[in-house]
Image (cartoon, rainbow, N blue to C red; front, side, top):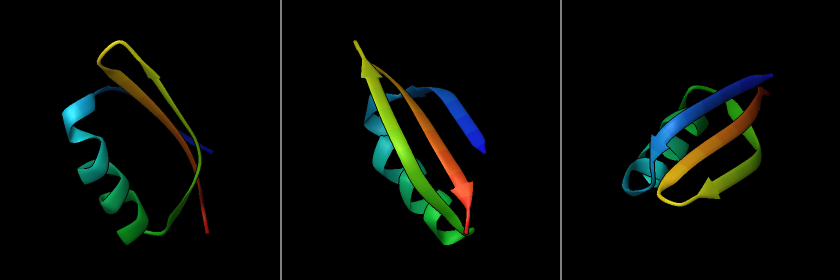
Length: 43
């Protein structure tokens, strides 16, 4: 399990694409105010 937090909301899609490219499946995305946290697991 990989947790990435403190992501600025405008960078969310860029981070999601990079996580997918290196082999992660996204499990959960949380957004509060302008901050994002992503939970992912390796395929």
